[in-house]
Length: 198
Image 1 (tube, rainbow, N blue to C red):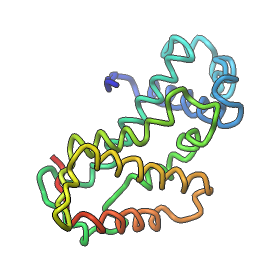
Image 2: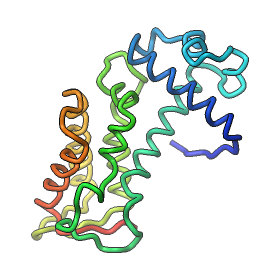
Image 3: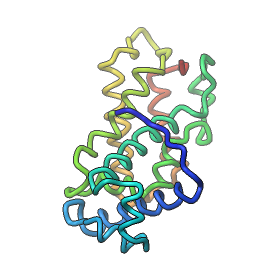
Image 4: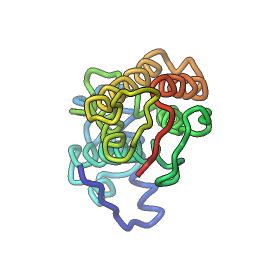
């Protein structure tokens, strides 16, 4: 998945954001396979010509939405940390980890993970985004003699984290983002004394 930046005006960015928001709402309501371009433009209150200024078809907006959220998930998971600085896990609190808040703020999109008729391939994106980030940029200091920097362990961490986050979503986000963040930090502290982002 390759992230590509476009130079768009603020108005164009806003228009595209409204199309993606409308698309996300419709998938939640009707299921992915039942959403058409006509549905999207009607919900977003634009015309088809405006849609086709930015997108070729439904598959195009799908790919852009999926890719954008994949990379935002990765960015949000690391942006609080200075490169190369050792972070002690015991010093972490709910304000030092933003992924949970990001998911909560984008509930409409992350609820798509709970649907059977959803964006094709979406179910693997959250654990894959977390795994890629951990594998490419995080080095952990273990609490004991265990190798917690292997790809296998990081894959385990990624799927476990994604599973807990999606369980939170499935239960209607009953716990606050702060509480969920504290729980995830508590799990991390059980096997890592610290980490660096590289």
